Amino acid sequence: MLYLEQMQEALDDLYLEQKKIEAEYRRRKEQTETGVKLALLAWLASLGTDERGLLRRPTPAQVVALRRRISIRFRPIELPRIKPPSLKPPTNDAAQRARPGNLHADINKMTGKAAAVMDGATETAAQVGIDPGRPPRIEMTKRGQRMQRDYDRNLEAVIFNGERKIDEVAWRWGAGSVTADQARSAARNFELPSGTFNLSTGTHPWAAVRGTIMDYGEKWHATYAAAAKKLGAKSPSVKYVVMAPREVMEDLAPSGLTARHLYRSFTFAALLGVYAGLDIEASTPDTLGLHHNSREVYVPVVPPMIAEAEEWAEKKRRAFLEGAGK
Image (cartoon, rainbow, N blue to C red):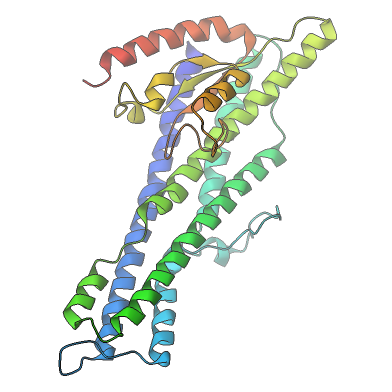
């Protein structure tokens, strides 16, 4: 089916953009960790040791100096905040946009690319029936900003917990029971929490893509429901085919959560039922998906195309299951 084949190509392209974002933020994470390690080692050297080889207790001024050094080292992953409940768009100031660590622009870019793909899909859908329409741009703007605020909160947690951890160990190192070698070893092993960081820089941009695609599906459903109401006919339902980038599918375990639903079709109500049955409370089909770092999306299909789409999806699922795990 040409429509879904084109959507597959589009998802593959979007995933390449996603990987570029993730690679950039992994680099920034490593840059931040390296900076923190160097700052800690320099600070330890400034403390000196006593005659037993134990670190000297830091003065309050030395602790303040460490906090200042560490704060500077966290700048590669900091960003201009959008604080709830404001929906004010990010500033257009060039210096602010260029500030390192600003994932807001990347989320907006992913949302925009997904919208462009779905605009093309809308034209395709209009050729087989009525024009299903496009969702208001303000709704997509709000969605992107919600993802941005989620990113803000996660990164604030990463920075806060990282600084607190350093603060705690600084006092412990200076308590008179840690050798300089032990402290230097701990400093060299400093790492930011990968789980929270990856959730922020990987999951939230893709969630913006997933949500944007779902926004179009909801608009299409509303258009067909309104048309049916005018005719006094039963309202047909838009269906959603579960798809994922090809590169992601290559690594899926056949028994995994994504694989169990791949290339199956659902109404939106049925999708909510899937999430309820799996007891997924922290996410929905239009936000973070089936699980942490999941990459499935739900591609809408208008009623005139459903039979052909389901036949296509069934063939794709059989081929996927035959090749999975090989």
